[in-house]
Image: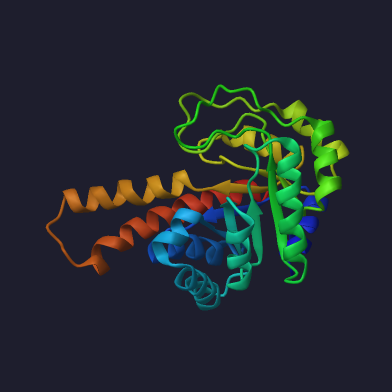
Length: 273
């Protein structure tokens, strides 16, 4: 099943799929162990910085091998691609899905570069996600008012032909300074006039009930990154602080399990079971 078909299915069913970023084998293993245990599908995400760290070919093959080894239904997605050129490299490497992020560009330019990626992805049969509105990235001001406008979202989807739209309704990337307050009414309005599945970025740190309400109002894909890194590093630091062990094969498994536990909780939450 293509990711486009899975997202459409979940939109109809009122469920969401977890899209989790991985950074190395260990975080990938934690994600896949959780998906295997719950028999849930998962979207494996790589940001440009992770691709630069791992190398594109290694990262793509690592994800494919992991999905096969653990017997998990999943897809590989470029998260926050900054350029059509990077998107094309990922498509050539076998990614199932790419995100082109022109959200900080003027509306017309965002449409132009997004449409270009949609046209490129067509021959690969790949899913394309784009973003409209301002979702604060690490180091950016979370208080900037850049929420997605419903009518603009409708026009953006129609003019680009994207398969999924990331919306700005009050989330942010990274740790929240205070509990986020999502504009759920705005989300309902966007969902009512926008035919494609909607994506929630900044899924780390959102209260469970608020996240469930967002899914009920149209969110089909929930991104998770910061929480995974945090769970992994906190447990690894704890292991290293309390031990002189230098064998990575002994120090990493508890951190892998911490990621697995986190992902299980998030998957159970977003699947709405």
